[in-house]
Length: 386
Length: 126
Image (cartoon, rainbow over all chains, first blue to last red; front, top):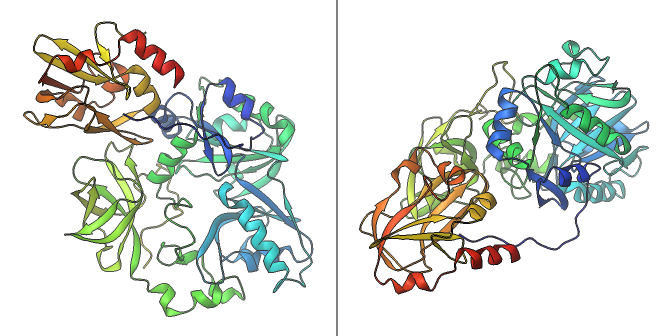
């Protein structure tokens, strides 16, 4: 086998970087950040989140606070979902599209009352900041709002798994029974001011915590302490990827990127064309946007192999689609993936062929999510949209 | 320390001669770098393999990697248990996690490979 050499590029470090090094994590360049891909092993970390609880450093995610009288108006222009429907303390999944209607990023928008928060992908943070600056030099010039990039001033930690609420409750005065999925509250954890959100990217119940960078290691260490007979697992980006894949959630750079529009990605439900002007609206209202002929589907491989990003979906000798993500599902024990295929072959049960190293391997379109926690949650990427 | 009773390739495979037949696997270092192995694609009994050419593919959660033949020869046995238990490669890379058995055309091929000590130095520099 061949072992790839590490690149020598200078990478950004989160406030928790020393903890990853001390834990002997395997580190990788992820969106320009030196991040842990795994500590012990991806499968053990994955199962810890499905069965118990795991702790993730998410500090590489971009955290952009929008404040001022026109904060909502700015967010409404930037993102496709209708943020005016967000009550204070609630969050929503949304997209940022270019004027051509293609996807620049997928984001979580939080209404924090006096200000709003956009959590953007690490690899897209600078692009989105540049996009905001560009729009504010043009169509948004009259808006009175401040955009503050708090990414390096804060730490963001995921606490994910069926035991997360029980363990976290003893550390915070916030009543977690009252904190619904996609809700957030300004509270404290062990006395440290914390934005605590019931969000995640794993398909499990769980939380994401944002604290000042100088408190990052304290909260990190606290969350990892054994409590009530449970020892939370250190989890890296490898497990984060297999967990989100099983949950059927899109990952920027895989299912979505600047070549895809929301409709073919099955995300039309977060494009609210009736809400007013926003980036990409005109392009997204043309019929061609909704009818690219492709649809994102979930599939199971019916024979041996591991589907990976970029593998062709074939019909005989002709490529008709492409795999966007794939792996052997740790929870289901079988190879699964997501792919763009012709819309007429996107129905559940449709037969596909995935080309793996020159061989056509049979696959079948299945409903999303692949894996569902016993408490039903709506996946980010649903299967039933047309 | 890697077992001294076998030889090693630069691409992190090992080979152990058992009379006329040799057992092939990947090293502890290789399985550690790969992480959790989830799928192994191996040749069939009777297939020909050629020294330092790919003879199969090993896939972990993270990545897919070619397997390189330590010798030229004919495959005489394949570790079928890896279909159900690919993690054997992680758990016991020098024992239950073996990949194939091969009849080398020439015993000389094995002599061109590294000793455990040489492989240890090779990995130390990697």
